[in-house]
Structures are given as C-alpha cells and as structure tokens.
Amino acid sequence: MMRNRAALAMVLQLLAAGFFMSSAAAQSASVPDLIEERTIAELGATLPADAEIDIRMAKGMIERGNFIQEFWIDADTGQFIANVATEDNLTQRVWGIAMVTLSVPVPTKRIAPDEIVRSEDVALVAMPLQRIGTYAIENIQDLVGQQVRRMLVAGRPVPRNSVMPPRIISRGEKVKIKLTHGGLQLTAKGRALDDASKGQELRVVNLSSNKALSTIATAAGVVEVIQ
Image 1 (tube, one colour):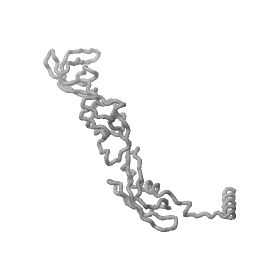
Image 2 (tube, helix red, strand yellow):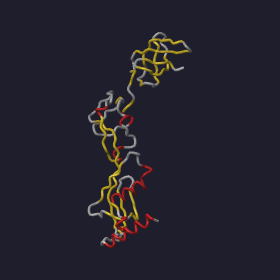
Image 3 (cartoon, one colour):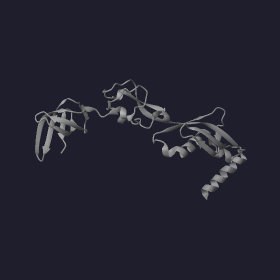
C-alpha cells in the first residue's frame, strides 16, 4: 500500500505541474522492434541460434506504434506486411524486408585443393541466410585445419563436402602395418591402396605376402589391421 500511495502522490504532483500522461504513449514502441518480435515469433523455430534479424522498412513508414494487429511474412524472401495500431488508435499498414543474417566463415583468398585451411585464411562475414545455403559450414572451428577437396573461392560460404580432415596417408604410399593380438604386436611393410584421413578405413597390401588387408589409418604412414 505504501508503494501505491507514493506512486499516486507522484502522479498528482505531475498533474498539478501541468504534465499529462497518455497510456497510448506509454505503450508505444519502435515499429522495427515490433516487427522483429513478430518475425522471431513466426520464424523462430527455423532460425539458427546465432542468426540476427535486420528490419528494413520501406520509405515513408511510421516509426512508432502500440502493437501489431496483423502480420504476414514470406519465410523465403523475408518480405513482410503488417497492420500497426498507432498512438492515435488508428491502423497503419507498413511493409519491408526482415533480413535474416548469420556470421559464417569464408575464405579471404582462393584456396586450392589439397591445401590446409589456416586461421589467417578465414574471416567471419555476416550474410543473408538465403545466400548461405543448407550445407555451408557455419562454425570457424569446423573449417580451420581441414584439407581442401574442391577449390574454395574468396568471400563465399564453404560447402561441407568441399573440405575433409587432413589426409595422413596417400594412395601408393609405403606404410607400416601394425597388428595387435593380445599383448603381442607385429609389424610389416605395406603399400596403401587408398587415400585416408586419421581414423578412416583403407585397404593396404602386405608387401611380404602380397595380401590385401583392411586397416585404419592411425598416424602419418601408419595403419592398424582391423580384426
């Protein structure tokens, strides 16, 4: 009660001093903010966690309003139309584009096949979600240290299938074959029949027996027989 009486006393003082309060004004907000809230409500489930929304209103639109009465948005283009209730209890139609952007790693230069992507070769750039594509790499840690499979173009998002873990064994390369059985470890010389990254399966031929074996790449030039 004390808090309510104090608030009432302050209101009476303001009225006595010539200040007039409008409930509509107290509720008004920036129209782009209202549009952003509705856009998130409409598209939230489909938006990446780190996505940002840039509301671009058409020229001549009202800047403030109380709330959105009706709202329509095209999820593919971001184009929206809304009916906004104004401070004067009128309805104004506004329209524009809700640009959904996401910061993704892109090469700062052209990177050729077989090169390893270095941190200095990559920068984070905010792009419209429609330009990024479904299969683009979104986290910089998923790109740095990878080996390029297909030419990477500067300034463009990187498709996941354009890079791979670094190759540690190349086809035709001589390798050390390891076979572990119980506490016994045997080794032999072999030749790789496939390319392989660490942990990847590949076939090798034992140079002593000329027998093909299924193995896993464990280190540069080293494979272990799959048992």
